[in-house]
Image (cartoon, rainbow, N blue to C red; front, side, top):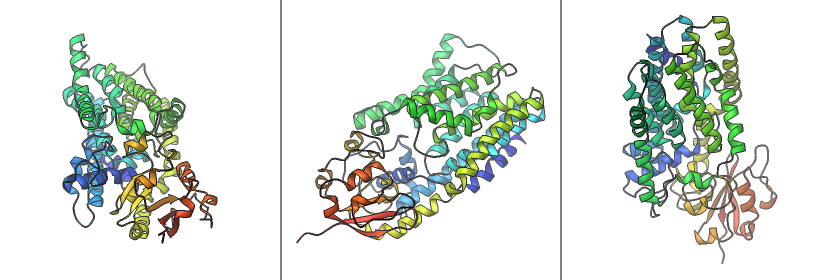
Length: 459
């Protein structure tokens, strides 16, 4: 019964926000398409392999689905289904764990937090690895309540192997009390930590051998900022329902361990410098643990106090859902429309753009100005949208097209340098010597407002 309730709680938001996606999902899908075609672990065919997919190996998992008229879209759709199914399995496990907690029926109110969570619904089927990691995270914490510690640790280790920022959370789970109340000796704790670190350690070793660095390329492309990380973590706590787990005295020891693991993850978000993507992506995998702790608290405390905490947590979730949800649900359709409008102007060209994701669905060769897939650009000063692109890059890479995003409500001006572009990198590129004279606008999309510029042929 609990498993059914968990799935029923997860389904409405999953369906409502199934249209959500982010451009990085297309980056992973393009790697998958190139792997499937035998071109190697590359973003552009013919280039050297690059570490453009943070969850190492995830694109290989998608490669069998990269086929059809558009292999990139085939891999992307497979990723959406994989994430959605993984989350439903995780939601079932979470519901079963809440049922096993025992105590008053009011504990099931914790599933309201699942039903109202836009981050869970959106990211489960966003086409990235987040849905798979979310499902693994939910099963990991549920197994603790269900008394299957080894399965839980295995899932936590796989999740941490896919997303490095989850390593502290996984270690905290490994060190936490077990559900049977038995204490763990030093040797047992050591073996549990080794178990959850095995896959992250293997990923680091493979990265070092294949790409020359044990750290993901994304860390080089965007240097962490503790200030931004603190703001991001604070917003996650307020808007994702984590406040519902704030309890201590009435919690069993194993639930206190889950609560501490969530707190450890929030701290790691501060150190990681947060994230530019909407709806608290980096917090999503640990939310099931927070909601399971909330259920434990609700099972044994006075309903009036539990109701107040749940209502406060729901207020934050509903604010996020109403503020961001409608726009998030429409992202996928807008991206596909933009691709249909502009793809004919990209085919066969060398395109420089901050948006390597959707541009990469086309057959263009992409120069990634965000540095997500390109180590040389990633090493430049600035973040993903503020790289200081050098003057000679376009000539060296033989760039003959640009794709740039105009700020909302602004229009393309007669002079390129007068146009209000959305990102700092694009403003910088527009002012590079020779760009205004060498490139001309050939196409524009409706919403969002992208422009395609082609290099002017010289006689």
